[in-house]
Length: 164
Image 1 (cartoon, rainbow, N blue to C red):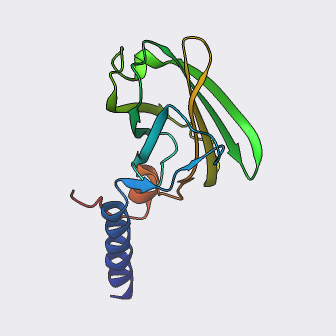
Image 2: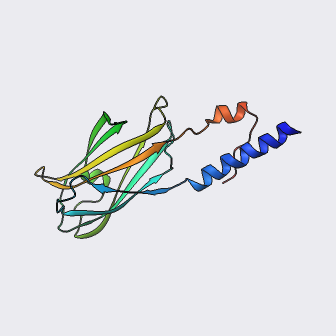
Image 3: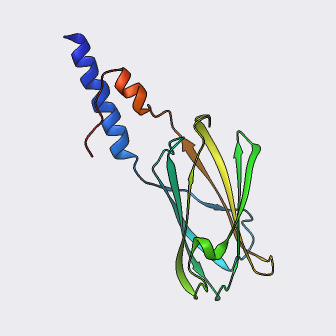
């Protein structure tokens, strides 16, 4: 009887965690608080949150452009416990429609983190540059990679997935 109750409690807690953390708006800070960036960032949403290793995660940045942007690049740097571990660059026009008109726009970036990625808190720095390599904005924020049980572990424990 106690095993059944324990299974129900664990299943309920897993369900609650999954449902309450599907998407997270995160606190964003500018890299240089004194800079007057041409692109103002209003927020970043991360889905799912916390990020699950081995599964796709989407980072969506809401921003506003003071001038039309015809092209450029998005540079992403990731640190773990203050140690730089990863960098990548993308053509800005592959992440949003170009030209970017004056006003609000969204940039989305999806990526699957390798299964061996350690859980914990990471810091991401995202820089946006125009076609002349002039910095349009630079933001930093933290995100978490969770200790989420894999399908195999859930099956091995005899638990069922929550119905979403």
